[in-house]
Length: 403
Image (cartoon, rainbow, N blue to C red):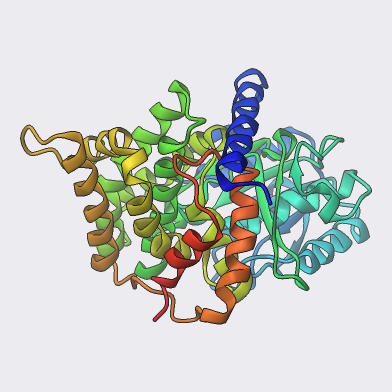
């Protein structure tokens, strides 16, 4: 068996090569509409792009509460036909993607509009990729495997967390193996996105908190990544500053439009950061909590984040200290080690303030080895983490999250 130190060398060399690719490849950004009723501006732009028949990808709850009503009315006014697929559920599976694809083909849709959180946007991305690439989802999973341009995709996020409106990634689950399979390719970045805070004012506090912590995790993991570059650093620090300033307000006062709009912008910035710098062990573990137990992704990230930051602290002290400064935590002439710990402690305090538990109630000790194997496979071949874990170390870390 290859010694772990040799394996780490291989992982680092792989990530160095990936960093070169990321720095040289053009990464598209969606045309962005932002502010009150920007979702309606996006609808007008869709009409200008001569799209006549939309597939709207969303979830049943958003339809039930009427969140899509003003969007569909605008589409009606513009003379755009549409059909709604509302079968997306948290942690979407291959089955949901295939169901949505069948609806697209049956109704000859020429474009897709995703309205919802990360699950709806990710499902829509893979639906669009499947529509033009005649191969199963598992063969699209991984990096740069979407060979043909996707069906035109427009997105309207209704939560401020995933950043999927701007990222090159979409995550869907194999319903048989419970394995999360990320599809990562610049071709799946949406053409246009609308950050409309008015669509987020009705979000419950617990969802606001979890999705906001998801955005924070994106910014933090991108900033401490070994593949961070000046561009991603700027976005990650800006996102962190906005989240620390506005997330508590958004949780306490969901109707505060200023807080909602700034959280939407923070999520977008964090997405720009991690789409190039990547994420890390927090996401790798959280993805598997979602696959095994259908744990909402933001909640899973929130639980895992403090544990991984403590583990990574020694290797990422200076970077964590910078995040502390961006969060307004410097009160004097603290050294970087103290600032790094203040940042980690502040993340824990936010979780406590938002009633996010430090452990995962659904986590079964007997599942930990399999969760660990899947998480390490994802992390080591995808993310440039600041400090590597072997199987035993990761199992011990995850065990701290057992009730």
